[in-house]
Image (cartoon, rainbow, N blue to C red; front, side, top):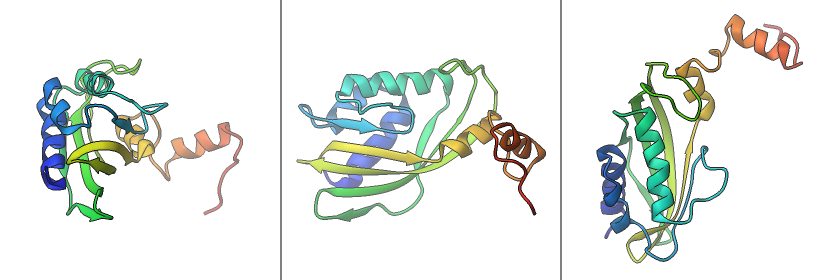
Amino acid sequence: MTADEVFDGWERAWSGRDPGAFAPLCDPEDVHYEDPFTPEPLESVEAIVRHAGRLWAGFPDARLQQTGPRLTGEGDRVAAPMKLLGTHTAELEGLTPTHRFVIVHGVAYAQLREGRIHRIRVFFDLYDAAVQLGVLPKPGTIGERALLLFRGFGLRQR
């Protein structure tokens, strides 16, 4: 598969909530996946599917969309800009449903092996996601200043 075919399939797998869609995209013997919610790399398709299942449980309408051209380099390396969209309608890792719609931009950086994902690391702004969900205050608000004061940073001069 080409890099575009792999990432088109990757977006369909996350958006389509089809656990079986990940296996054809990943190296069957050695796959590594990381994102801000994985404390250590996930090292199997089954682990990636369980991780996706947690997202699908909390954001049943979650979908992944390409946001720009995919960049390839050194033959097997790919950077793929994307955004994750969805509405938080069910408990997720102890966070009660906020019923807020979020759009989180990110980029996946991957190494392919024989047309499949060998290593993939997804970067996105976890702080922005927390702000959109209402877990953290918006920058520049009184809530943010109160949080900084509470954390011991004092108030910033404007």
